[in-house]
Length: 152
Image (tube, rainbow, N blue to C red; front, side, top):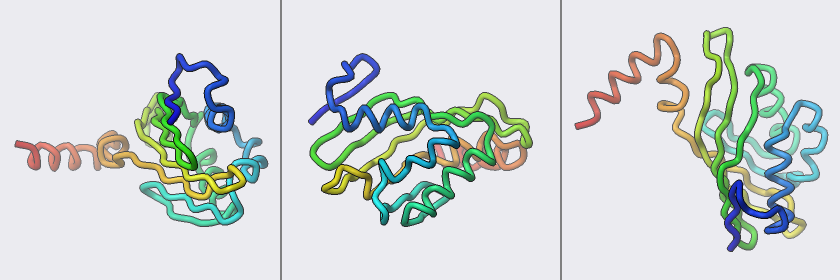
């Protein structure tokens, strides 16, 4: 098992370090390189999407760049073992049309790799209610009320 963090030397796990570098520098032009990292029939799931295949995965990332202002990932910690990798991250972005700038979502991703080292499963886990909905003007008030009522 390899545990990577900001202090880990880059030689720790070259394959995983390349993936971290790719995600932290991800820009629209990099979507041309998805096939380097994802298998043809890779599956992707997050709180809003569940798709399979390179073209639908690319569409998810394209939508991210179209809908959000300056989206970027900052990887915080990584644990990898064999064909599995678990990565915690901060996702930074703005959503100006809703008056949201300087936003951050904290989440994590589970990657599974095929025999060729490319991703066969990309599963994002993050709390859409806490990390996004509570920050929206009208929906946020309702979500905060529900949270207060559900807590002791």
